Image 1 (tube, rainbow, N blue to C red):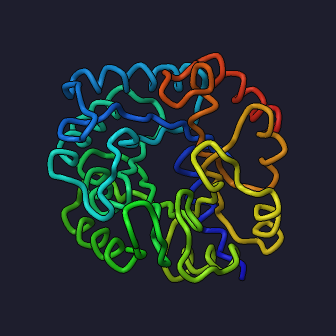
Image 2: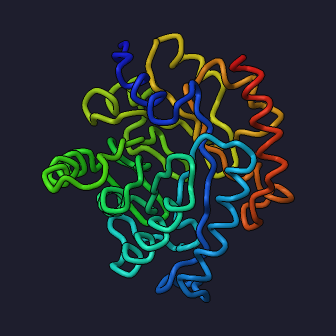
Length: 279
């Protein structure tokens, strides 16, 4: 069940390093969302502040997410969300020296791909690329069959980039309808769902994936594997040998609270540990 290393090479080429560390930019609630109270320029100002803190700390990439738009739409985002995120992501890319990605919750993956393609973002996260799950919005099914066709169609327009697709397996805040082992889920996402990388998480935001799962995936040489929740300054060096990249948010915030701004000193401390491992 070994996946060809060309996808791992593609991941490393995008970020310019082995085992890239991707920091989260959790957008404030966007116009039209139930908890929204800010204009687009105000949301952008918070996002720019987080971007600057991440880049100052020497992060390898950033992922922009409409985290505060809950309760989330299960399949597609409102047009106002697509427009708002497009405007914000475009401005973030102008200010960023590292690759920028897009995630539109809960599983608006085609919308994320359109935003990324038109703004020049270089990757997207898709929470449910393959499989079928029960989530707080009901039942959601994998969208790889739609998403890969959208990707092909968008490439015909010669947009600024062809974004990579990172797909979760056994995603957090969800229960699979028909449980399968994580290695089989990962292989299906890579080989049948055509993911460019797969993401492994804990059960909820801020909770780490099981080390035993990461070890199993490494033992079976399934790559590229990113860990998408629960990474901290305390466990980063223990986890790094078993994964090919990290998506990290909560533990880089002030007071380790997801609602707080990014703390550049925490980012720098984390990246020093990562660099020591790379060396």
